[in-house]
Image (cartoon, rainbow, N blue to C red):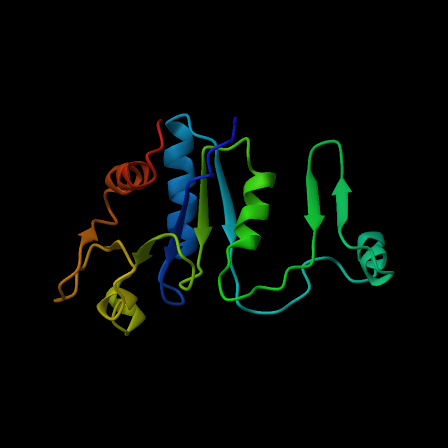
Length: 173
């Protein structure tokens, strides 16, 4: 049976304003410079409209379409309803299909998923790292490690963070 491997996925988690977006962008550049095709997903727990209300694609969905796509000469997008059950992973499996041409999927956010998680943290967040109470976070990425017993990687050493992701996911580069 010729079955494609699952797309390796790592979640960059952290408290609000901890630097998740900046780290994801830095990692995309670092890993892309190493020759990897990196896809990203921004996870949010907020319920809001992703499509533009009033536009044709939105009208198609309002009319009852089970899924709507937009295809232009240089980009495509799909809007597919997704009811997230207790982290059954269905949404990420759908994303894997869309990004099957990629080597790695970096997700910003989603503490509750069953996947590799790295937490970005700095003392300005005024709260301890999630890793202080959670065992499912592989390492904390920070240049100011708090006095706690968990693994950390230096935020200032982006190459080391990228290496760790490649090691975790067994991704070549």
